[in-house]
Length: 351
Image: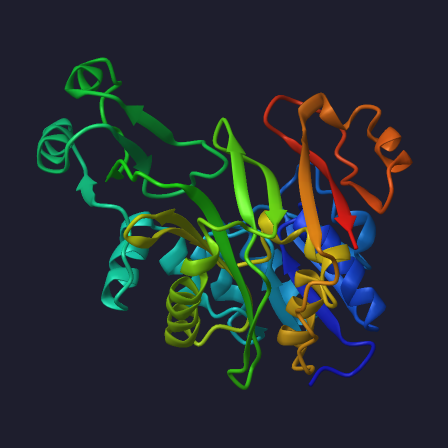
């Protein structure tokens, strides 16, 4: 158990690290961040911040030397960046990062645990793509195996004719068959060092242009009967990885039960509602878990909750949202509002 005054290192400098650092401070911990140069909005909330490339092993070692434990808020941290901090306790474990960073590895990992991802096929060439589209069928979607998020690194295939119009395959990809689903939802859990697991209520997630727009509770009739099966798989994933911290798994609710979409080995956008809508937020429980503290109550404290992302210029004038009843505004302090960029979020509760 980390004593008050201990230091938690955070790899990544985005809004997830910012909100994590806020909770760490309330529990009496210091935070030190590490991220390449950029709009690192977590930096003002950290006691110290290293602005260096992931390949700077000297800086990473100096960062680790100042930390009692290290976590991350950004799952695309190169695994090689973890080598200079190997002597410092790292939560979640490195294996979680390695599995989640490769969509093909992730899908195979989930299948081995009895989970059901969408039909998929590895793509390394144009011939592979044509074969995959023939075997699995169209429509479908091509996703890069690495570094894709918020709709990036994805191409939709409506028919075989669309394949000819695509640029040549230049990086390893995965082809996924179309899933006929009624709704999308996420399972968010926290796992302690001793293996205790707690779940938050699952929200219904609505996306626009591949980016999460809203998370809503209660999730609705299409989702509720499928939550237990989805939780069982999420728990198996966490246990198999020896996970410590918050883990998010995204699912499609279908006529045949939940279909696994992807996992995020970190606090997650669809869990932002927990800041005001749950007894203990995902950020506080992540800090509690990595620090070795008892986990907090994950119960929902309102009858209805809506979390809405403020994307791009939607953040302009967002303070006007506060005129509503039981409305909570979070602005991330990002300097430039560009299309598709998450600038903040608003949470509305009905008690």
